Image 1 (cartoon, rainbow, N blue to C red):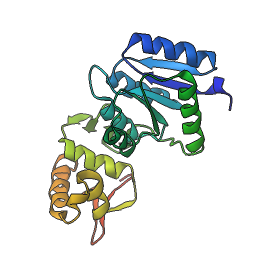
Image 2: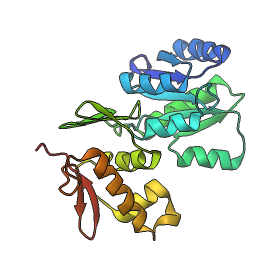
Image 3: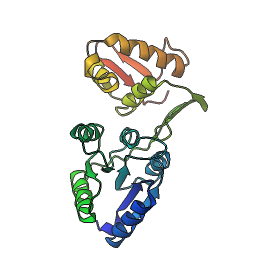
Length: 233
């Protein structure tokens, strides 16, 4: 695959940096698209399915770390972070949230190109073809916009409820153990608190199931965990 066939999405609000990246990357044959806000970047990532995302952390509408987490919730695209945060704990947080690599400002274009090529090599053949919009009968989840609809009506979920639903979507049709869900949604300190999971699963069922006592989507696998049913009724 030639560089000219590869598309890079740049999510950066500073015009001089975008201009620098545009000139440098275009001269090396990459196709470019640009976003100046986090929300615009998330939506373009959903629409374009770029080969690489270059993401600045200092965006005007939301922290770049939140953009990273939201894209990573439905896409395996390589993401290279541009950051002025040089502390070790900041870098660890970025990698834990799903960044493939990071560059501390100021940086040279040669180093950036090397990081992009390395990210592409590491993820070759691993890109997901999943769409950020998941439809199961009357349930529709738009993960790019963080919107959930049932029978075309907007359903309001709390952040924890939404995170739990997305964790199940990422394993659509497969059983996810209680420990996996507790770890992913609440963190390792909650592994011995399964009542949190039971309570929030009840909340989700009351919002998403026509008959919460006979769930169509959110299936309990007794003694193991839960499964988001992907079979049509």
